[in-house]
Length: 529
Image (tube, rainbow, N blue to C red; front, side, top):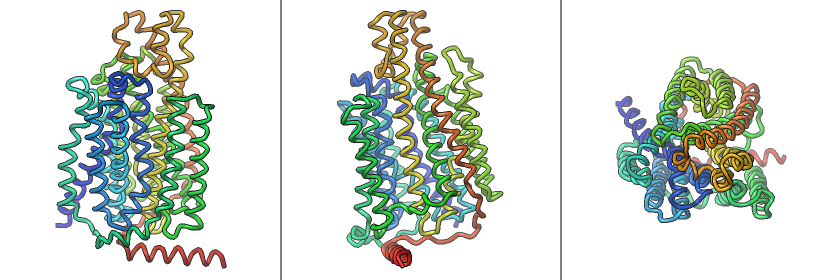
């Protein structure tokens, strides 16, 4: 009976997670089409990062709310928000409406991803949860990898709107499954008592601070010069509010959103750095490889997805093997380190990709990079959870996911900025070879939204433009290779701890939170004395 219960829970969680993860990258192959339809040159960057930005902002607050009101009610709320955002995106009549829908999607999606991980952490011991997390991470990795393929198929065969319409029946079924079959411990629902102990000040500070910072990066990447007063003010005020958030959490909050101790210990801090770099680099592959396939190779959205299949397979296999290895040996450091070696080497190889790269080279490079990415999906999380007390597992998981989501949002912006800058640098060359009108079309921020127009050029013109795209993306891959190398250096500072085989029951609800608040108060009083 217990095995059946676990199977039903895992299937339910997998079905919910798949859609949330899918919509992180499915946008990659449809974004050029959406940008062209709404005549928005900057829409390509915003279409992806609006989801990721909202996902990053929502993660800590939703995770903390689940400590108070239980995991099941919050995952139902997150799934409902995801479906509402899907409906708005599907029926959008402007880029602004589309982006609002994507942001609401991201709020729900971010909550789904972190709550799925927290639920599994609640159910299993440190040693066993690695295997179950690997199953979830395979679902996550497959969804990320299949996203561009599925987006290409739907866009080519029907309309990009069906990318979001399909979420409604599929997500509705997942919502029903969760309501009836997600058999997990849920505390008595005491709404008003819960409202009184949630750290709303911390939630507001992290939401506003992160939002201002990421919007500032977005504006600098897509709408305004980097030295414009608006961009500078947004970034500076975002960082300043983030500093205020840290001070508030450390000294004043009675029920902090994040366990700040994880930033003061060498091993846990190194683990979070690894996770942050992993988020930056993994999203780059999912988001910009389809861009390379469509621009430099002239692939259709559907063919672009097919080209991406080696990443799907390698990521999934590596994630499964990593989880099984951790469960068998209790060693999470080895998958982290080896994965970062492969991830760094693979992204370094991407620098070599050109408009004439062979299929064998494209497949090999993807396999190497994706194997490294797959090994680092669950290993850092297992390690971090082993470094904190059981009552801080949920908040530590939320902290890791917040940084990972923040990294993915920054990754799309940073990569897009580097690419657009390099395409702007190619304008003079394109002008001399193709004329001013065509050079303007394929330069700077217009480069992505103009990808569909490459197919309408003559064969000679196509070669010139495709080489410009490939060269610009090569510079971008140097940046991601360096970030991966930073993660590799940080991994050396991670300490291997013994993973517990015994399962410790984690309590949620008002009573558990009050005990936690009392413990924090006593700890601060002891620190003052």
